[in-house]
Length: 397
Image (tube, rainbow, N blue to C red; front, top):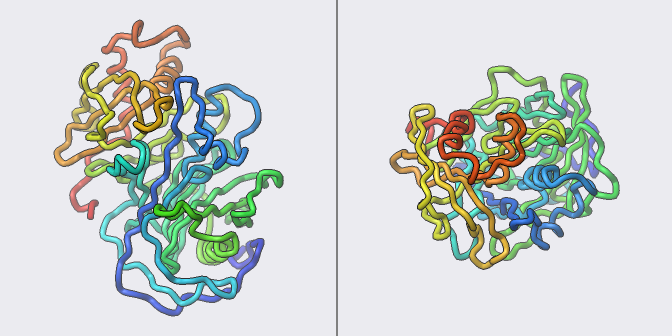
């Protein structure tokens, strides 16, 4: 089945871009990572943004996983720089194409704007020489999304159950948006009039349901794209790209922070372990600026060398991601890489660390830092950090 045979709701014309510009525009999108208090409650604003996407009921772990997996969709995603090209007649008007990317892979880094954002505002950049193809999982099966024209680039955020979440950059429109790829239809009661919906077929015979979600302007908090503009962007994705079965050797890399990269596979999307059911505990890291004022490296638990990188491990009680939110406090285990020029620190929330510890050490639910020695924490680090490596200099800008 050809790409143009794919059903597309709110159909747009097949206008193709007619102008290619020379200048390269960097795309930086930042998303407010999920934050919680000691009772794992999300903020009112985040609950409103989620628009009841999470199923009713369920355990705390289920809610944690669902909310974390919404980080590129239902949370407030802010795009810093957006091209001024307009949309007209349902299709993309003549626009410019970004210059050739100079780094190898898409990247995730951090925001240093401490007074404007919390510690967990993470910057996503989908540019990269290998970004026109991305692999992801839906319902435990792996697929590959590729745009042979290289006008689109992708970043896989992660997968949960029958949905995958991606960041998409349209280099002709100079715009980006979040994309949800689902193996089952979206619940009509949960569809948003602000988003665009459609379907896309694959060469494997699967039909996927897709949802495009606008990002926000940083300065105003306003949505960048209307639903009709999202429909035009989604139409470009449907007619330009195709979905096939994943290539076992095609999972690629994801640049992390300043000097690191993470390898990817069907279970690991860069910072998150993907889930195929509600019953699987998820490992999810946060990428934070090490000089953020509320990060505390006083309680040193030990050190470990993984993939040639020396990591110092710290424990911090009462971490404040947002100093203005006195209730948004939780405890962290920090993994600080000793790599020259690296300013990020990888953190895991204490309850997630102990979920992992319990899973791999026999299900003793009474464990805490009072009963688990620093040596036992360090012993888990080999696997927790196994995906991270120091990136070659030529992979960076």
